[in-house]
Image (tube, rainbow, N blue to C red; front, side, top):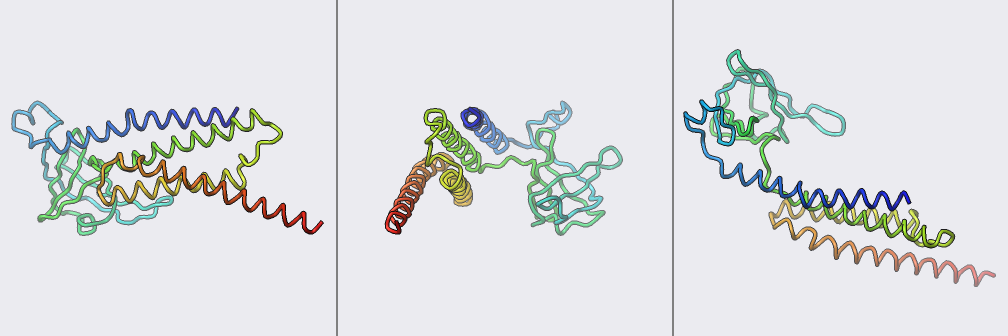
Length: 236
């Protein structure tokens, strides 16, 4: 029953990904790309859907600081004496590694967050900037669907055949299937994001690849089991 419940949770995660998370990120990126520079009137009305620019001063920078399993890349900024804040980046370059305390930078803000910093023609997006690469969203969603299917099949096998549910066990079949479909989903998602192909190609590629890999793993394990049984019978 626990496996069945886990499959339902994973299926719900898949639904949320494709019904809300992916469309929301795509719409937000499209809105960001379509945003124009704020007019004086919009600035006075505190509109945030347009792009506003501010001249800020760098207080300090943190580059490649170890934090857990990753690194921290951020800059602490101030606006005159009325505001002080920290913005994060996905890496040190091309701008962050050049900044020094006291430098003046041009910050672009959108919907209440600083999305780009620039200085002397060099610009760098912050982690708050919407990203157009939603292929990894799709990879996460299809992985959740595949894990839901695996958990359901393994759970159903245990319920219907409580004394003989092989090969639907964690070791070796379940473990190999789990890591294989995870590697396929992440690999295809990263490749699609790097190449820039549409997000829907991720599930279109991952699902058949995962099904074929699962079938091959099952066939390989059955063949090894048959060979082992044959070897035991010969020794007897």
